[in-house]
Image (cartoon, rainbow, N blue to C red; front, side, top):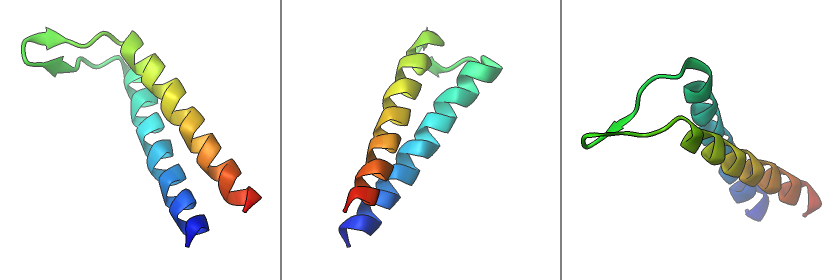
Length: 63
């Protein structure tokens, strides 16, 4: 069960990282309320989500 949960979490974080990366690549606008979210925010989000995904997959293999 823990291996499955770690694998699912890794996939979810990987999908989030890919969404952040797609915004970095295509540079589309993201508007929250009346404010435009800067693209650099997605660079930070990508790094965090990719790191968490890597961590989940690595932890799953160590069990």
